[in-house]
Structure formats: C-alpha cells, structure tokens
Amino acid sequence: MFACLLLQCLCAAALAQAVSFPELTSAIPGHQDVTYFDLAKMIVPDLKPGDDGFYTGGAPIEMRDILGGNDGGSPPETVNLPNAAVLAIKAGGKDRLAMLLDLGQSQDSAEGFAVLALYDLTGKPKLLDSVNVGTDQSTYFRDPGKLPISVGDDALITMSTHFNSNQGYVGTILILVRNDRFEAIDQINTFDENVCAYKRTQDLSFQTHGGDRPYAAIEVTVTDATKPSGESCEEPAAKAASHDISVTYRWDDAKSRYVRNSDAFEKLSAENEKRF
Image 1 (cartoon, helix red, strand yellow):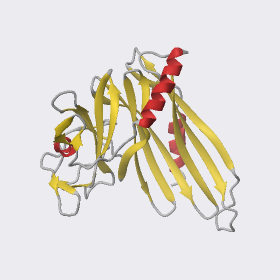
Image 2: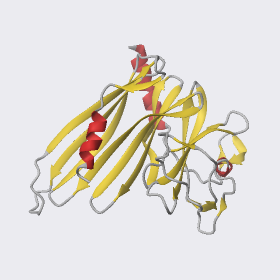
Image 3: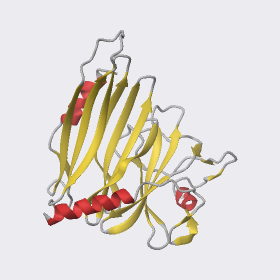
Image 4: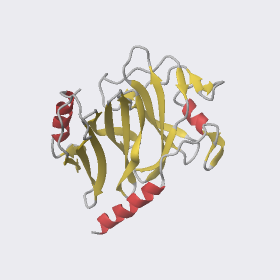
C-alpha cells in the first residue's frame, strides 16, 4: 500500500516537471557556462546557428536504433534544428537530463531521424547514451513524457506521427533507462480516422502499479472510440462505440526486461493496417 501511495505522489511530482523547450543558447541550470546548444553539439558536432532561427549542421554521431535492426530512418545530410525538447528524469537513483532532437528526414527515407540523448549534469556535462527514436515523420515526447516506475527511476514515452487529409498515424515507444542506457519496452501503433460519416480515435493512457520490484508494473490502455457525424455521406453510417484495450508490462527478473501480458496491441496494429 505504501509503495502505491508513493508512486501516486511521484506521478504528481512528474506532472509538475513537464517537457520544456528552452532556447538552445540559454544556460543549463547549475551550469552558467554551459548551454543547451553545447549539449546539442555532442550529437551534431558541427552544429551552428543559422540565419532563420534554425540551427544547421551535418550528420549526427553514430548511434543505434531504439527498436534494434535497421528499420529506423536515416539521418539527413544537412540538419535544420528549430529547437529541442528537454526533460529532467531519474535513472538508477541519479538525476539525468533527457533531450529529444528531431533532425528531420533524409531524401531517401520515409521516416524522420529523431535523437533521444541522455546526459549526466552532476559535474562536467557528459553524454551517456543516444538513440534514434524516429519511426515516422515527426517525433515528440508523448504526454506525460515520463512515468515514475520506482523512487529513483522514470520510464520515458516518445511518439512519432504523420497525418494526411483524414488519417493520423502514431507510433508510441515506452523506454526504460537502465545502467544509463535506453532500452525499448514496447512500441504501440495507433490509427485515427476523420471522414464524413464518423470520427474514430485511438487514445493512449498510462498508469503505474506499485509493489513490484525493482520496477513498477506499467498498464497502457488504448481507448478506441467511434463518433458518428450524423451527416449524409458516401461512407456507411457508423454506430457510436467505445472500448478499451489494455496491456500490462511487468518486470521479469529472469529475462531482465519488461514483459507484456498480452499481444492485444499487435492484434490492434494488424487490424488498423487493414483500414489504411
């Protein structure tokens, strides 16, 4: 019971420490001689201010894809960076800074290239890890950005998306930080439609359940809702409907990773692909 109450307090504190978009030229708290631009240069070494408010540079440093394999996008030959999202987190009981830099797309890639970087700011700022988390055209931290999974650990949430005239595609990645390295917990793909006859949305919510060691269980719920427009349309009329699809991830000591209790999200992704 105490663990559950503690996690609730940590969740409230996490919401108060939201994702921010500081000016890259501004100093890092506690380091008046170091800016966020200096941190970004650890990712794109020749990064420099441009004339249009953007920051330009060449290719980033070498890094792995968070999901493994070679399915991620390629970095663009020239980076045009408008800003970066930063989020203070806990990892292994230590204070860390996560920074997300969406570097854009290369000409031969349908996916963007977005760098999630982990920094230690306790002394001289140090880059601890960096991964590509871009799985679609644009990438962001997904609200709430982080989830407290122990007193000294946060899980991160990113999302990649693109939209056309009436469809929205979103890939959400749950990420564990362990031993100062990023590890993917899972990717959840959702699909929204907004046509004449109806609007169908698939919204995500996250909840942690205390009591497990060393990390709390994470419950992710997709609310799949259809709302008829009431208009006369070419598409068949749709009925109002809403249902929840939930998957819980629990830490498995033997496998040394989070394990899901269901393949419901894989089935949902397969069903969504039939509607593309």
